[in-house]
Length: 118
Image (cartoon, rainbow, N blue to C red; front, top):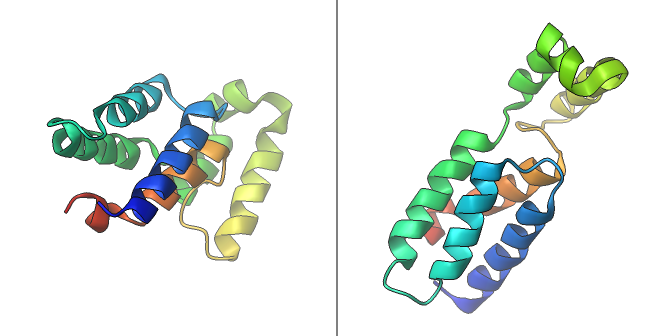
C-alpha cells in the first residue's frame, strides 16, 4: 500500500476509533488493523477490517427507518424526529450513508476499498 493511502487510512481509522458513534466491534477491528500494519497479518486484518466497516456503516434509508421507529425513539429520544429529518435532507443531497462521525470515517475508508485490498 502506498504511503499516502496508508497515512490517510490511519488518520480515518483514528477518527473512527474516537467517534462517539463507533461500535465496539468496529473499534476492535480498527485497532487490530492498526496493530497489524507492517506485519505478516496486515492483508488478512485489512480484509477483516473492510468487512467490519461494510457491516457497520448505516445506509441512509436504514437510518431514516430506524429514526422513525420505536427502537429509534429509544436510542435518539426526543431528538429522533430531528435525526430522521436530517437524514432525509442529506439523502436529498445525494448521501448514501449516515453522516455521523463513525459512518463518515468508514465511508472515507471504504472509498479506497479496492486499493486497500490489493
